[in-house]
Image (cartoon, rainbow over all chains, first blue to last red; front, side):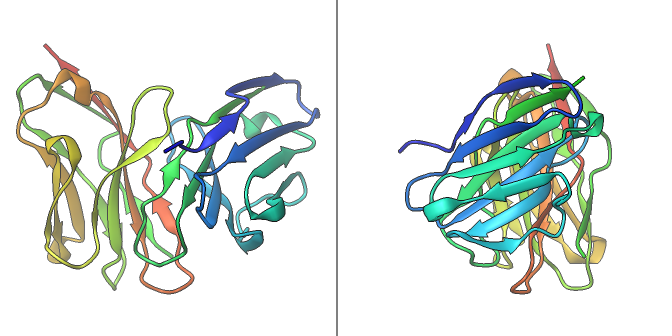
Length: 116
Length: 114
């Protein structure tokens, strides 16, 4: 079974530029998550989709971050304009459903963003 | 809101020694608890989870964790460390409400030395 695919693996941009990350979850997984992992910190949830609807985006900086999951399959996370503090690894994860207590998320390898 | 505290950002043990990684949660209602492992340049992988069944939970690669409500703890242990255990370990908690989400601790980097 193919895992969660993310691209690009690495991206270096100047501040105020824009960047987009792509994620393809495990086939059949209804729930998709984007996490931000800053060096030395645990992953922080940015946005959670259930199929193509947003379940939780309370920690997404909506003035500069946007995400979509068209057709309930793959997803794109965009940052525009980027700030220095956006330097982090952006992790995509998926899970079969939204049942509380499963906690079993399947993570991709992440996209490492460096903002100069 | 849930919070998870991992004591010790770095832990170093000798190969063959006991591994003990500490995790405490803050909640009046015991949440669901998890340990994830992250190897270098890889995504997180579930090690084990507690969902209110047995308080001693066994996971992959010889790891286990014990839920102690009186101490609000969920420490991760392994009797004998192996070089391949070197990685970053994250404790996470999910509340029992329908709108709950998974909250991660700040992680503990485990180093295994010869």
